[in-house]
Each structure stands twice: as structure tokens, then as C-alpha cells.
Image (cartoon, rainbow, N blue to C red; front, side):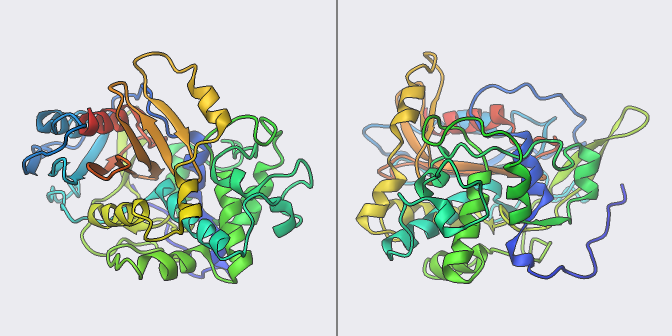
Length: 413
């Protein structure tokens, strides 16, 4: 399939822009760990077998690391993904595994050190920068966002900065009517970018789904506003602040926060979307290159493991702001009380996602998706066991919650 070329001239102020890829995925999906029905699509032929390496386990509270379950999990969606990579680290066991192919044309193996797009995992980096700014007394988490960004949001109801980070803002989300969300449209427009102010303006034209602080619902509009807030407070793009405050101090040499570069440099798997053809077949379109923008960080499993470890150990935040990472709003706890038995209980703090699995193990981290890429990072609070994974879904929605659920459960159950 022939894809639209990248624009020859980059628009002014691109640093404040968001790719249609991330925005459209946000409009289509909210990442959960429930069971999701995904249509089966033809997968590339001659997919390589699962490969893995492992070391012995150690932990008094976690179940032993189940390597067979992990191997089964990462190879469980051959018709919905082209590749998968997973890494388990920590005193309670080490394991790495790959499945599929990095390139459906060459059948190259999946690189263990491969780069991938982070999608909404970028939100953890954005939240960390906001919390650092709070520690520097440059922003008050309990102060209305409208006072910092006048004219960006409706003047009422007042929305606290903290509510942007913990998904209780009540801000409406983009819908499929706002951006192209069909596979063909996604492929053709993956190099488009939009000012964040424009995306927020489109979102707030919709009716607020609830009053601030009365519910917790996953979404992206609050983080578009948070990224705008970083720029307003610092005079730099959120990508520049993430690079200066997090990537360089932690020596995350394989993690980048591109503002205009559409490529992934270094070893990586390709991302694809299955596009329906007139004869009813599906054709895989390579969407590896796409506009970066918000959700556009690129990293590796090793770098994300290093970032998550530093974050949990308090290397990036003082104690007061560190507490925000692991504080779930009371309204979210109330919503969790109705979770059916045997289902994962999911809630959000200021930046992180908390999952309590049916076996009682609680992990913290984040999932993310953009065109052709889905990933996640999770760890027990004590860092005894940590999981980072990336896979390449071919569906337009992208997040494949069933595969995420199976992978996380295999690592911690």
C-alpha cells in the first residue's frame, strides 16, 4: 500500500503538537484490562517461534515466576499482532522473550533491545515533570488549571491541576467525529499534527461527562492540558523538559522525545495497520514512521525498567510528590468496590495505573498505544518483580486489552 509522504515543510510551533496517531487512538480506546473481542485477521506467514531466556526466581510474597505462562502469553495473538517483546526483572525473577517478526517483508527476528513508541506511557513522564514543578513551587496541584491557562478551558467548573493527572477532571474526550479513526484514514493522516490547543478546543466542545472530582475515567484530554501547562510554566516543550529532567539524569540513552522526527532510529520492530481492501481482504500498511508529538516518546524495555525503578525509589521526586504517585482518589476506591470478583481492580493515581490482580498481587505502572505499537510497564511497589512489554497490533484500536491482561497476569500471577 502506498502511504502519504511526510510533509515537506514542518509547521511553525510543531513542538506543541500532537500526532493524529495518538489522538485518534485516544478517541477510539481507553486502556483497560478486561476481555476485548478483536476480529481475527490474516497474519504474516512463517512467523518465527517464541524465544526466551530466564534466570531463577526469588521472592517470599509473589508466586514463582511462571515462564511457561509468559511464553504462552506473548505468543497468544498471532493473528492480531506481528511481534511481541517482554522483559521481567527484579529479585523475584528475570525473563526475556520475543515472538513474531520485526519486519514482515524481511522476516527479521524481533530485537531484544528494540525501540518502540510509548503512546500513553508518555503520560507518566508528563506527570513526573508536573510533580517536579510542584516540588519547585511553580505550580499548586490544588489550584484551578484555568488560572494557569486562561482561555484554554471553560471558566467553570474549576478543575484542579491534580485532577488532570488522576483522571478526575471531567474533561470530555475527542470522538471519532473529531479525527479520522478508520484504518485507511489513520494511515493516510499519520503524518498530520495538530496544536494541542486545537485538540483541547475540539474536546471541550463536547458536554462534560461528569463534574470534576466526582468520577474517575481514563482519558487523554487532561494530559494534553498538562503538557500545555508544562510549556506555559517553563517556556519549553514538554519533550524538552522530559529530556532535561528525566532522560539525561537517568542516562536513558535509548529513549528519545522527538518533536518532529518521524523515524525510529536504531533496532526496532515495524508497526502495521490492517487496511480493508475492496475485495474484502486485509493489507498490512507500514506505519512505523509517523508524527511523534504527545505520546511520541520512543524507548526500550531496559530503559523503561530503569525509569520505573528510579521513579519508585524516589530518585526523581521529593517525598511529598512521590506520595502522589501512589495515592488513588477516594472516588476511584469507591468505584473499585463494585468490581466483580475474579476481575482485576483498576484505578489511577497522579500518573500511574494501579492494578490489583485476582490473586491479590497489586502492581503499579502504565499502558500505552499508538498506531502499530502497544506497550506497558508494571512493578510491585517494592520492585521485587517488574514487567515491561511491547507488541505490534494490526488493528486500528490498537490496545488489545485481552493480550495486555494475559501478559500482566502471566508475569505476576
